[in-house]
Every structure is written in structure tokens, then in C-alpha cells.
Length: 471
Image (cartoon, rainbow, N blue to C red):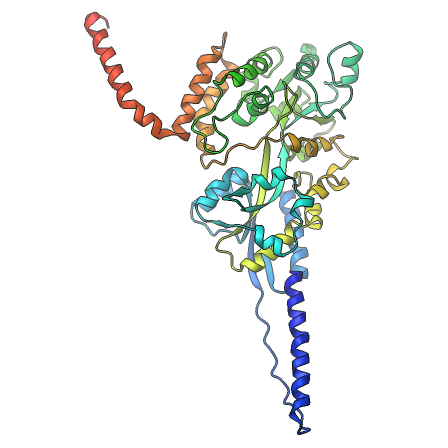
């Protein structure tokens, strides 16, 4: 926006010089006729699409209002959806693509394949955006495809551990010679300390449980990565998950010793009655994994005392993240004006205004290490855990089938945690990988099925011949 104003000012000055020269050259002493007034073009109307809670949307609106008050060439209208899925559904249904819009990294491949976005790296570079100074490599890599920056990183919230500080008291644990981190400021803690904390916060008299980790790809992935395993068989073009690999099974073996312990974790009956977050808010759950977006709701719970720690390590420090970016529509009313607004929306001043609502972990590092984000006078006391955990972030492959993959594996992954009384880890992990192929590589299953079917038919025929009277 400043660049465009600067050009107009320079052109106006140049026009004045040329006009003065023309008068001097007339030589007839006559006055030049007054120029006709120039009609100002109507501002370009831009649509900005976001999702979030009422508080988040209000913060976005305040940022838009600031832009509209200062901009000459464009005006922005905010349109919001309740969540990411609602915005995605609107786009898939053929609704108008906002000129600039919030997007999850999990939707990036679909957006690019459908041609709904345009790269922003050159546009932002022309406008002086400091990529290297204010953004981590992981943030920029997350929204890159085809060797171009497709969207500007906006939020990058790593998964962390939320814990009830009245149930999980590290000082009391150390006094009892139990494994515990030396202080919450520790950048890492071990899985053994995590297990000890779950046991310490499980108190039958208070009817509390120690820990809950969602049995999902995102929930289990940090522990698989930390234990030396992999979630997918390839980081660029996966054809299967890799839960049956040796490293992944070893990591799961250690993790499931805790997650399958019915004395320390929420039971199926409890999960049917309330969500893990609701049990946590009631003071009945010691620890749960989650993202920064949970913080404002937890702050509203009277009497709840909580803090955060990184994901515990089984070997290496690893986590996954909820990553968002701001994208520029390929059919924007004006690419130039859309890019100007994108610069405004990702500026330190604008991100600071939005981050104060408490939901966002900003990709802008200047804001991420500021008190506007850390909010040291509010819970959690150690907000820097979110920012520091970005260094351990593992980025999954770019897929356009996340929803289908999660649906295909939901039952398999849950059986890792709930199957009783014994778990055949080898069989379950092989089934997970097989079921993932129905989404990631269905062609390979189709090519295998004819021969498999023929073999099965032959086996059935032989069985029938051997036992003709069996019912």
C-alpha cells in the first residue's frame, strides 16, 4: 500500500514539473486553461474470509477496520465461518472464493490443485516483507509447494501437554523422589516423567484420571516420531502409513503401556459422558494434549489452575502442529490490492492485535516472543512452551485426502488404545497400514485384488469339498 502511494506521489510531482516546463515554453504570455478535474476511481472491494470464535472474529474485524481507515484504493469486507471445515465446505460447494482467506495447511494441496490460490512470494517480496527475519524455515516450508510460497504463514500452533497444576505438582513429586522435571521452564521432559505425572495425578478418592491422548493420527504422531518411528512410508508421496515399521512399533509399545492403562486414563464410559477437555475443566483429568486454541476457554473456567509442557520425549524431541496461512485468491478482484491487504494483515502490528485474543500462536516470530502473545500475567504461566516447541515440529506430507484418511483409520487407531484384554500390536499396525492404502494408494489394492480373490475362491472351493456337510 505504501509503495503504491509512493508511486502516485512521484508521478504527481513529475507531472507538475512537466506542466511548469510547458508553460515556460509557450512564450505567448497567455495563461494555460485550467485542467479538468480527474475523477477518482472507486476503491476496489475485497472479501476477507476467516473462521473462528466470536472473539477471534472480532479481533480480525478490528484489524480490517484499521486497514479500511487508512487505505485509499481498496476496502475490505470480513466474512467468517465457525470453523475450518465450514469454510472448506463452502469452497467445495462452489461458493465465492474470498480475495484473501485463512487456510489450514491440511487443505493446501487441494487449494493448489484446484487453482484457487496464486503464489505470494514475489508479490510480498516486492512489498518489502522480511521473510528471513520474522519467520522460521518450518513456517515457510509448511506453505510452500511447486518451489513457490503459496500462502503467507499466519499461525503455527504445536501440540503440547496441558496439565492441572493442582493435580500435577512437580515439586511434591521431586520431594517424594518421583521422576519429575526440575522446573516447568525445562525445554524437555522424559516419557518416564510423563508416566509418573499421570500416576501421581490419578487419585481414586478424588475420582481423577491421569492423562488422555486422542487415539488419532495427530494424537499419536508426536510419540511415534519421538520414539524413532515414522507415520508415513514417504514424506513426499506416501502410499501408506508406517505404523507396522520396526521403529514405529517400538515407539507405540512404550506409549501404549501408558495409554492402555485403564487405571490412569479416561474410560470409554467416561468419554461417552464428556469430552477430555470437559473432564479437564472439571478438575478430573491431570493432563491432556492439545493446541493453543484451547487456552481462552480454559481461562474462563472458575478455579481451574493449568499450565503447559512440551510433548514428552521417548528419544528425540518431536511434535505436530495446527498450521494456518493467509492465501490470495487466483480470481482476486485485484491481485495488487489483495497483496497490499495481505501485507497489512501479516504485519507485526496487525498480528499483535489478533494474538491478544489468546487463540493464535503467530508464525511471526517478533510477535511470538512478545508479551502480547506470552501474556505472562495470565494462564498458562509458561506460554513460551508453544513458541519453543515450533523447533520440534514435524511436517506431514501434503495430502488432499486428510478427512478420508482419518475416517478410514478411526476404528483401527482407537483399537490400539481400547482393545482388551490383550493387544496384538503386529496385527493391528499391519491393518492400519493396509487400510491407509485404501485412501493413499487404492490403485495398488485394485491391482492385487483379482489374484487374491482367485486364491480365496480356490481355498473356499477346497474347503467345501473337504467338509460337504458343514453348515
